[in-house]
Length: 139
Image 1 (cartoon, rainbow, N blue to C red):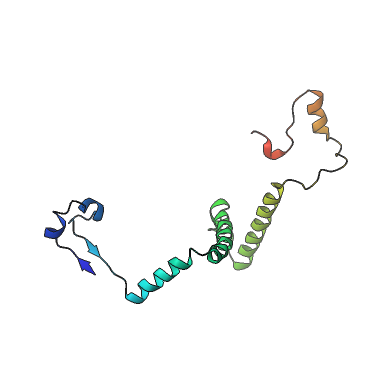
Image 2 (image 1 turned 135 degrees about the horizontal axis):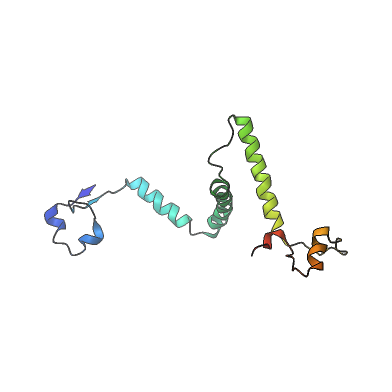
């Protein structure tokens, strides 16, 4: 660890870039040699295509965890007990999978369209445009 006194720090023109402490003193820590060498080795490894491919998988998993935690409130459980919490997690995962699958485009269109519902007939008779999907309603 290196500590610079006020008399050394104050006249320095780059002091504002260096420290924001009240007493304007700069303290710099140096890791042990083994840790420093490990950091350099790991940083060099992170630049390889193999490492980036492995990290891409982790990134996808972390994105899913983040979606559950922040998008679906999975940090807090509505129920008490491990069994009920597990059911909540499973049902939330099913809902997310359904939501993801519904956003996919169908591989091929159905050969014969379904008959319109009574509500769709009602909209057609009054010449009210109807959206293709409930997801586009209000957009």
